[in-house]
Length: 555
Image (cartoon, rainbow, N blue to C red; front, side):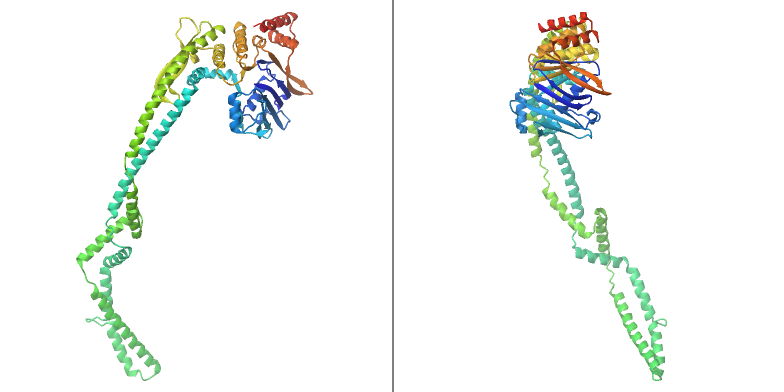
């Protein structure tokens, strides 16, 4: 239970130490006095999100510390798992929020993450506020309410574990089928590639020779024409050739070569050129005569080179790259396994597990059906007590495909008036009806819930008079098995409490602050009278308040 709450510099609360009894604690105060701030403080130590705006203006940080005692079995087990010690079944949880936006948390002076606070907090306190009515307005959440009533945790956990295994197996089969399809496509690709490249019967060196030969064949006409032209120029039998002109020049200089050294030098140079050109002429004739025009060879070289060149363009690589690609493709093809055996085993395993999951879903569905009957009876009894005797509650139970929650679709239906067909709660229930229906639900599951502390934050919205009194009595009954903290604006609820705390806003030296005061008997009478009749209540209202407190004590 929540034994004590310490608050410092939280919004308008400068400092407050708030003790709680183990039964029914009520908070009252004028609108805007700071009741919501108190709930925000509790939420903070329970790991809920807070912002720096919550820090009191002009202060560096806000501090909230909660002392919990008589820890439950689940809470102690989780603390043991986290390695957090607790003495005398007590722990303190502290949350500090700095004005710069940074915050920290501790459990028994040990640093803890906000997620850890939230995890532990869910085992210590349950807060029920007006927003909880959204559970009733959201049909998809009704199944959780029914399961909470039916102590279905074991069945649900067993089912969910197998269902998640089934999901994982289905995913594995999907991946296997995808991989199988990809492997098939890969095999087709590799076989096509290997078929393309299987005729690579040349080495890289042989291909280079083939390429050179192809270039010569490709340029053969040009080569022969050029050689012929140069041969004619050097040694043309039908016309004056370069060699003829050089021979004539050599002859002319021969007669005068002895006249001077310069002329002799020119003569020798022309003789040398003539000899060189004569050799060149012979070699050109030799090269020209060496070209053997073999039509079959030419056709083979051109065809082979064209084929290999087209493959290089197709696979965007050179000839050595083609050879490498062929080797790698052949090697990869050998490693690809296209067997269906593994996939077949997975499918058989899935079929077996699907059968087991379906059986468990049917058992869970039957359990929910039986639970629904008891649930309707008990909630209806609670609603009668809460002045809703004509309300008929039904549980719509449909079955369908398997989901993580089973095969069931659950929705709560009500009929507010006799003779009317039951309809979805979201469509016909008023705000006051929702509050009482929600309280009825909380009542029937209170003894099944292991969380020791329940907080009701203005769940009495939309009700008054006798209905409000019945809500107060019902919360008091719940407080016999759970610690209850209740924020209310109704005297009918406030008089039922064992501990009454007054939240007041005061202004001093142009600074507003909120205080929390534990009321004695006289203080309770004055506060109940204020709620009943406003400020400065008359003696009659004061007597009436005292009488209401006396009557409540006898319930």
